[in-house]
Image (tube, rainbow, N blue to C red; front, side, top):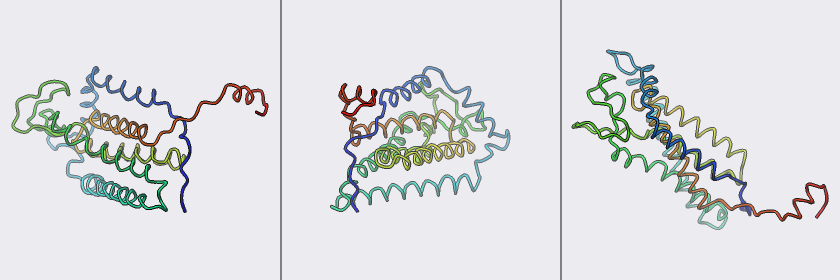
Length: 247
C-alpha cells in the first residue's frame, strides 16, 4: 500500500528549535561546567577502588556493547528501507528514508573527529579520579601528555540521541509515533549517558554536548529535506473562521 506524502508539514518554530540549543552551547562555553561535572562524577567514584561501574558486566557488555549493536542494526535497517523506497510501491517514503539515513549517519560520524580534535580526557584518566592526566577545560590548551584523550563529546550517548532523527522523520506523517520516538531517543540517550558516567568514561557536559549536536544535525536535515512550510491563510479566511462564518 502506497503512503501518500502530506502536502505540507506541521508547523515547527525553527527560531526556538535552533535558538535554544545554540544558547545552551554558548552557556556551556562561557560558564565552565567542570564544578558540576566533578561533583556528579564523585558520586560514582570510590577512592582506592575507582568508578563503581568501570568493570560492570551490565554497563559494559549489555548497556554499552549490545545496545550500540542494536542502534547499528537500526541504521542498517534504515539503509535497507531507503533502498526499498527506490522501488515504485514505496516511492513516497524515499525522502523520509533518505533523511533518516543522512541524519543518523551525520549524528554518529561527527563524534570521532571531534574527539580527535579536542583531545579531552575521560574522568577515569584524571589524577582526581585515580589516573595520571591533568584536567583542562574544553577551550584551554591541553597539558603535555603522551596519551591524548578522546572523550569529548560523548560517543555512546550519540547512539541514543541520534534516534532523534526518527522523531523528525515521523512528525509530519505519524505524529503519535513521532512523540514516542522523541521520548525513546531522549530516554535512551539519557540512560546511555548515565551508564558511561557511572563507568567514569564521561562527564555530564560531554553528553549534553552530544545531545545538542545531534538535535541540531537532525533539525537542520529536517529543515532542508522534509519540511514544507504551511501556506499562510488569507486574512478573509481567518476572519470568517473567527466570526464563525463560512468562506
